Image (cartoon, rainbow over all chains, first blue to last red; front, top):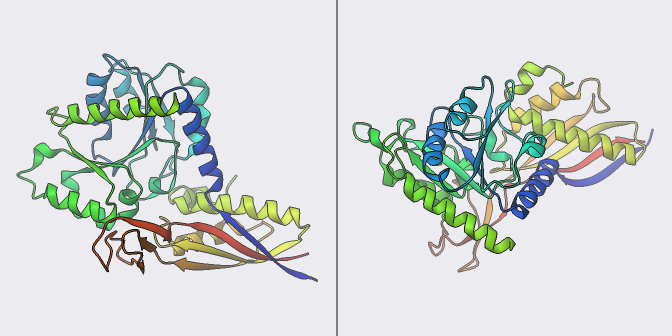
Length: 223
Length: 124
């Protein structure tokens, strides 16, 4: 028997990164801005998307990929707003991967402006998987507590935007919005931050303006 | 089909280990290897995986594969950053991106986010 040491030095997420880079390139070439939304379950991703849809879809074409363990409920909510939506059922898995998004690719209309990907509700697992997005958003809802950025640093360090949601619940909730933002920026100084109440429609206009600015930027760079 | 799908689905570490086995099998084939008896990974503190869960996932996954008797070693790599203003290099166990030396937030990550198959020992 001969033993041999083999040096490999290969990225364990290399395949996912490669597929994600390909998705990002293809979407960018079509002028589509893709946005990955990550958060704990119940932080308000779908409600925020409904609120964004009401403002964006009068002028722009958007579509949504919904990642959930079970049920078409989130996709149905989006469809009721007149927005095309695809539901990825992970059947138990805690995150989306680029290949799941890639499989839907043939169905995604080329004339879209925005593609939103709502990840499985989970503040841990999705953070390791690039889905080919241009903007990664992490949502933090006020009922979760303002201590989450330091407890779940990976989700915050890998994100481009932090969206604090359900601000209408403060007070009575003892959530310190400035503290949450400050601590999130300590783990990621380049994080861009937003505060919204999707139910009351507060802060969503600013978010939509920034989405449109990001789309313009993408098209300028790819032109 | 993955072994033990029920435990597999609930942690993303298993999905990482599934990718690891794809790489292992490809590399062993290239080298005409018969089996793998040692695997070494480098896992960054900010890689987003738990080393203990990677070990569990590895033990679940390796059964009936070319690595069924393989031992897994995980080297945990701390988060290391360089300050772009004062050039200080430091380890950040608290993941706070503020320079210990000059207070700048203009830091560059050098290592600690990676998840790498460093090497394997095989029988040929």
